[in-house]
Length: 66
Image 1 (cartoon, helix red, strand yellow):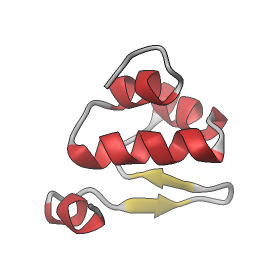
Image 2 (spheres, helix red, strand yellow):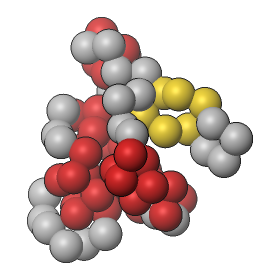
Image 3 (tube, one colour):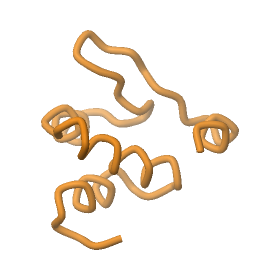
Image 4 (cartoon, helix red, strand yellow):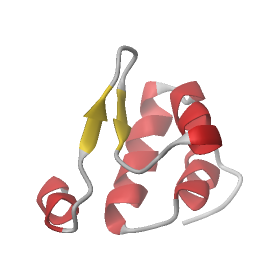
């Protein structure tokens, strides 16, 4: 999946706390950083698939089904 994401120009940006997907900023960045490690994995799977950051957050937290 990472290869597909890289082909589309989505890469991971290193931060002090964790890796945040490139292009995720502001409120969505804060929400991503508030997730548990397991939730981040779910988020990243959907983000790499091409879903919007807000949808990834809702799916990862169980507010929305995939």
